[in-house]
Length: 640
Image (cartoon, rainbow, N blue to C red; front, side, top):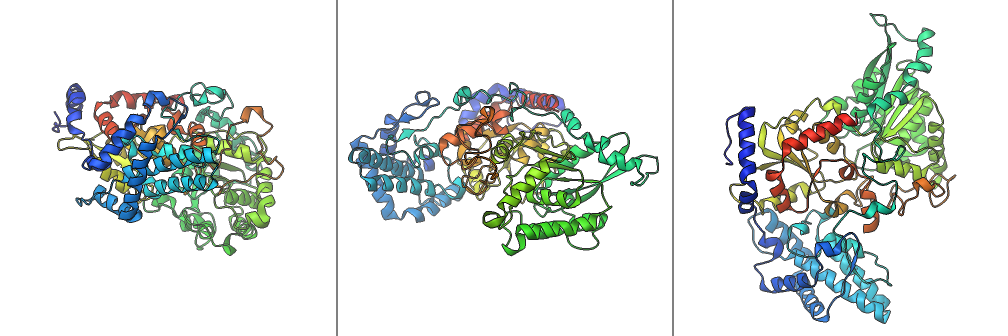
């Protein structure tokens, strides 16, 4: 059944039918349980796991609300003894042992998930006792045990596959009880996402979202109306005044430049402008890009800053915006990126570009977009995908805050500037931070891929993860669950991979492990209608929200409010936009559960969700992928 057949659609259909007919029975023979994760080879840890599992409520019992966690003294004693044992072994050194166990043939064995469960139990018992004794030190120590448990699971949870084990305590339980109120007992985290939105009328599936909701997708046909200024305002007036050059066939030319840091986010804006802003009087001429110095090995055509500068009349100088911003994933030096320095650089660039273009598109950083538009006063399409304060001026908190928000207010007041965002969370963040109408959400359609699902590599799935180490460890973990004969192999893709969109679309499916709340990679695969498999919400809470994230940062890195707004946010007095949690920080599990619903991962239909690695491997060979890709194509057309 699993053998490759000859090529051809008829053979493909026969093979799919044969696989489907036996998959349910056969896959259970090809997906293993894993003794490394369960520690089933160690009698002490096995006894602890079984006793803890007996005390744990079932998934249905947990539902969508936390369930109180009460620790029996006998179970707590065992947990204390196991924590002492782990500390004697050297807790932090043992994490390396687990990694070697996971990714090599080495078998020294450290019961990592058992240690995490024991630490959680000790923390719960201390918290429980302190609630009675009012011992402040026990409350503090309980939280330290939770921090240690989270630390053991690796940088950005790269060793965290607890849902794929038999252990009952998972990371969501750690998050549920982080900074737990002294008045409340520890609790089991909910395992079910449904029901969170029922008390918030504006939070519902994308098909039912009310007009004006950030969850209501604005179609690209509606985009044309937003961009009408390109054919009917300043540009057309200039045509009438003879300020623009004639083309050979008598049509007028509108030259534009793209400014940004993320290659495909900027490509999306360029495609949008070229496709939906063209008026009969105009021919759009794209001059190139400025600012992009990220993933140039994958998208070299988007990193031709020097060429773009030449085309736009900036001479032979290096890309001034890329030079100013520096590396995509590193902060600029303080002296080189103050508000005054950014403003003067944009003014110099505006002088070089004068008379060389009629408009520009800009995606990030926001402050570059705002100050370049201010310096040129050209029509601008802003298509934002990163927080407003991403790559903010280095003196923002000292003296440039008012200037920063003033630049946004000025930008939003101009008729020849149009601002969109590519995801609902960013729209809510900007509404919280600044006064004015909520910016329209335009989902990326990634038409620039010029590719569509064609699974010629139908025995290969693409595994995509760009989180540090996760792309390595996830592939390692999969190997622990696949026995000889499993029909699908995995092609691992990370930030350094250079696959073409056609190669990506040739895979049977994509397994996308999110590293941020909104991902252009998600929209690219969805646009190509590649069947997309993603972790269920309770797993994704710790992946989409992370201290090193941008939109989903769990720190206060991107929190800032226009000083003309209340301290509670600019939406504080707007009943339509009132949310139970601010759209920043995301430290608590409750805030992550709420705001994860604003992710396209959760809103878009036809995403195949898996709860564990065995569940992923099962669904990869039992899901009707033909029906899935057809449904994705229909949704793409419906929202176009």
